Length: 191
Image (tube, rainbow, N blue to C red; front, side):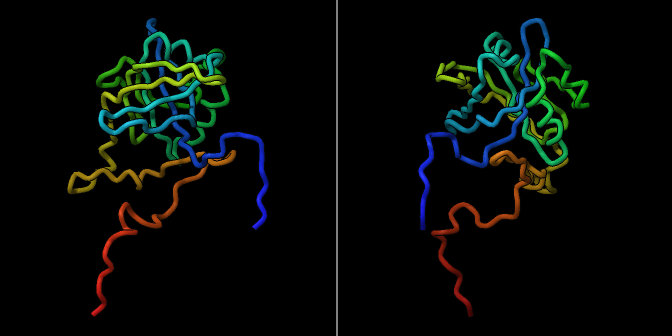
């Protein structure tokens, strides 16, 4: 198979299309859509968002050192795109998208009610990396929409219509093709 070698670049896809809510000390809030976010550590639970210093939300992240990662679904993908291409300097994204701001349980930053999962975060470190600065944070609470809980109390995250971003397109996650550990499970004998 022939291969091409390209210049260095980020080709790790898909990535989240997460709406991140931020606030400043005066109570101004904004929504920024980021793809540069993910898990850093499971114990203690930690995450990050990487943001360009010229973005409107940057000063809010730096000032309050808090943010909420709000997972995007098929129902909220239009709003996520809008919040990624419009600046909070110019528009009120809450008003323009019709998203609902809800008080968080542990941080001063609001949640987006329409999102099935909201991850409340407190920044522990800011790393200046180049085009983006990484806000490393501990996760202090996870809020989930109860309408996705089954009768046994299990949260059906895969039934929420989660969206990922891949090479310029928003894509809904598809059917399962395996589960954790299935490659090493003993095969059941056929009788």
